[in-house]
Length: 354
Ligand code: NAI
Ligand code: MG
Image (cartoon, rainbow, N blue to C red; front, side, top):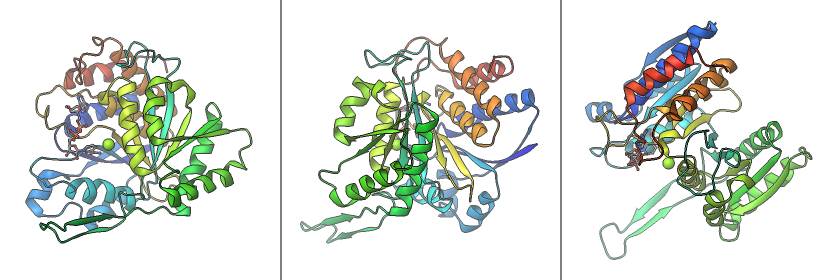
């Protein structure tokens, strides 16, 4: 069997960590007897600065033909904010209806969390971030720009259809895990969106009597997630809140260099996209320090979604095992060396028990 992947390395550290992810995926493919076909797409800051286009229609259609997309990171100080983040990555999430952003928060054995009391036993949850709505994709406008009356409007949209899609996914995932789902929102202030989320959780939850539910405000979540991650199993939340609490989750699990994610289309109507939670890290780009583990763990999620369960388990186990040999938490880079670590992880993929 053959899986046909689109590869978008992107900007900054994106191409380096993506190369490590592909190395691990190829080692897993060799071991478990499947083939990977890859096509590189030159998207990101360079392409934008050359062409003035962040993402063309023809590129979207070409990407649509792949089984999955492996994504590094985009973002560059030379490009004004929003053009690539909104015009490329958010645009792809919407075009391919990747409505569920899956962000596991797991402390791997041998990694020390910067938060006291967090252990491998009490830190194993999944944040599900709604990926196509909220404040990130609705319109807005600027009035009286540059005057003392300057006013900015930034709209937020929440639909029943998209909310139901992610909440259903959340209940199914909770059922396959420890049977608990937490809704995270700000229903006491954002009452309109909040009521719709609560209504959908109650409605869908009626079909999952075996899954218990609770509710946590997003501000309180910023206290509970680091102090007591063990109370969470599956957390379902909106786009902005999910963006923020999943970076917090990344810190709890040892840093952004370890945090993986999937932009998942639960219906299979278009390819899903797999990327580390971190961005292009311009501050360390080109230095070869970026930790590739987050990218390899995202590749493992890609393999799982493609039905390659053993390959996924081995990529995850190999990353965790190599990470455990690194010096304890010593800043964002964790003592990583991108290329060398990528090779070590790929070698381990070939031998480690699933
Ligand atoms: P960032 O995630 O790129 O970096 C935050 C900090 O973590 C930096 O100090 C960086 O050096 C460190 N870091 C990140 N990944 C690392 C890794 N693998 N190993 C070691 N250290 C790592 O976030 P920042 O600085 O806010 O954004 C930089 C650019 O990336 C911006 O243009 C932003 O818009 C973009 N961005 C893109 C994302 C994407 O492609 N999905 C996601 C987040 C940000
Ligand atoms: Mg983010």
